Length: 267
Length: 250
Image 1 (cartoon, rainbow over the protein chains, first blue to last red):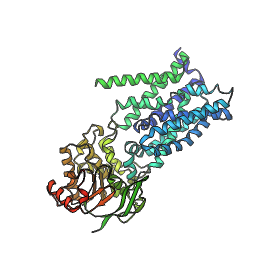
Image 2: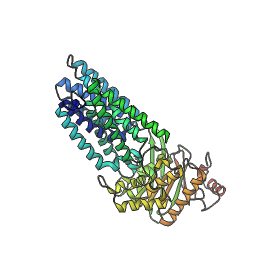
Image 3: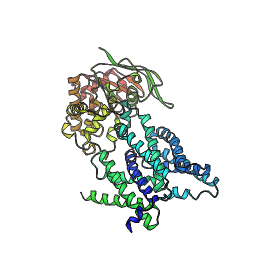
Image 4: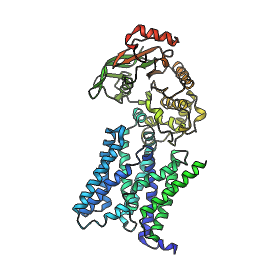
């Protein structure tokens, strides 16, 4: 009965995609949380939604169209963030409004062809195609390589951007590159948890692991563990309960966060 | 003696607000100089211009005879920013990792630190008497200890120039005295040129040989005080030399 969940191809694809996402989402999310940009995931997911709406309207692969749109938007977000350095939440609010407005406008133009958009809003395990899995796999490799190679610079900029810049680190280049990594992570993570909940996959594992860890690397590893547990259990439950996987994954993550907070408060 | 910093007629504005007006001064190799002025007088802006964070509207800023942007090895400048004490205290990072950051630019992108780099980190921590704390989380330290770690980060690349922007902010008297003991020892032993910004003249009156006073964007670079003078004595001398330094905090 339990193993029935592994008998379907779409479930295998969902597990593979979920496992890959539970590696990259906390990896990138940890830097976002410590940069105090937790809401950036939400912002990019709204822009990605515009990309998906554009893809559906033009008959393109929505994952590919959303990737292109979020990549372009990452330059715009970084420019706004720099110009409102003391009020970085302005860049978040402006970009979020922009993404949502464009998405609603494009959905409106695509009369009758918007059934798929629900999958992207709330996440879906059925709709993950073989191509999606390939794209997520390649992006995971790219993101792991990028963070490995730029790890020390990313940590320095996250910790103290001003000192990093004065020491000669190419902060502008790395920040733009990082925004590209964030955009890619959000665009692929949306396939499982949906646009409305994607930022929780970036933020909650990191919030929980910060309570337990004693180093930056440990924070990332705990985050990956919490993500993997919640994604895996969430997908299984969504299969048997016929509920949205996004909501279940996030509820499990919140449960983990509550347990971790309880444990750390008793130490 | 060779001038390591030279500013010629530097002007800088934030929009219409002119912050620095026709600033000209030189700092020689091995000097320990204080830049003093009330809050909002433009002293941090001045330091940011010398470090290269801000570009002046007009005038020249030369470090070792070159523009900062043209310096090939930024490691010759050690910088402790004003906001260091405001950093995220729950950031999960150890003391030695924070200090190692001072070597990242020298190592270059995509290159890991090696054993000799870590030895430099430990040497820098020893200079600020923080080697025993190398594995502690930075957030677990006191304000004074943290500031010493940030100074070690600035020193790890073995700079020729050390810039400190209000390094004693948030410190108690004991921690402040300890910080200055370490800076004086560094200055005497290594001959490093130190430029320190502070809003409180009493902090450095008896510790530096030259004070540059800045107020309303203008500079008064001749407020020389006697080494190891009493604060009261230093105050009188400064008042005597330039009336511009008498107001407010002075």
